[in-house]
Length: 160
Image (cartoon, rainbow, N blue to C red; front, side, top):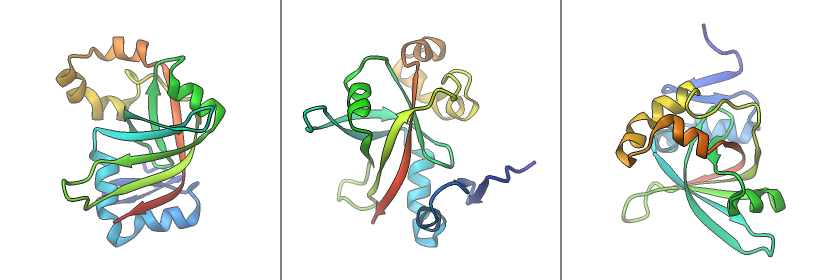
C-alpha cells in the first residue's frame, strides 16, 4: 500500500507537505544527484548558530524521510543549545574533490519527539546498520546515547 502523503521519484520519497518550490526542486530531472546524495550519503555537515551568533559545524548521520532531515543527538550538546537559541541551520552534503555535485539545504531545526528511537526506526536502521558496524557502534547503545531526535525542515535547497 502506498503512502498518500508521499510522492516517489526514482525510489526517493518527496512529501506532499513540502513547500511547492522544494517539491518541484526534488522531483526535477536535473535533481537526480540531490536525491542520490540525500538517500545514500552516510554523513552530512550541520551548521548551527551559537547563542552569540557564531557559526558552528558538526558532522551528523541523517535520514531524509520525505519531508525533511532526521538526525539524533546526545542531550545537552552544543548543537542542541544552538538550535534552541537559533533554529536556523544549514546542512551540506559531501561532494567530489573538485566541488561538483554540491547539495546545501537551509531550514529550521527543532525537536522531533514523535520520532522513534534510531534502533527501532526501520528506515534509519536499514541505512545505518553497516555504518554502525564499521564504526564499532552497537545499535541499542547508540540509540540510548543519541536519544534526542531532531528534524530539519527545509526552506531552501541549492545544488550544482
